[in-house]
Image (cartoon, rainbow, N blue to C red; front, side, top):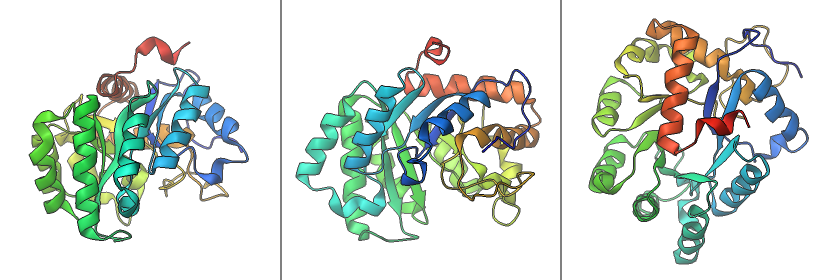
Length: 279
């Protein structure tokens, strides 16, 4: 499959802070997916861990692509009911791996409620405590649970080494809350969705440089406005430049300007040296 986004012959360097590259939809062509992303200008990626096993897989993938891929270690709220004492201990071991640059994906999801809400709140708090112990930022998930999410996060925020509100899709009130909590904001192809994402466009100028990050959440959230439209609904990191173009236009910035400050902010938050991108 060839990239369908319009990029310059020398594309700006972009950092995809959220790609589920261990997802089984990539099993047949994972190396090609990574190569296509690189060719499109996506020089570094954070591979999302959403379970204990998935976090271990993300670490192994990052180890195999040293300096270009990094990992998170965490338990998504969908799997919160699995985070018992033994799982917390194993997750703590994984979080110490040098490839791991954030704890998560963790948070609350009251939209699906795949885990009981009390279990979600308990798992979220335990992972925030873990992040504070290991001194790494948090990779945060919130859907239809803002009040509880913000309340729990406030209890732990002082001890945390930063964090990102991954896949931000909410409104101005939530955005202002997350900025007040000194979080970075992760933007995905949701902003390209004319049905559900148009409300995000006027919010883009409210996010200061240094607090805005870009992500695909691949294989999910394929931008709906890609032209020509890919035959598959699978999203890939190579489409991040398209998301960047939409965000840049909404902010009144050039693609180069947006790429520069979002990539710099990602590297600063996750402690990734710039030279690793070119090695």
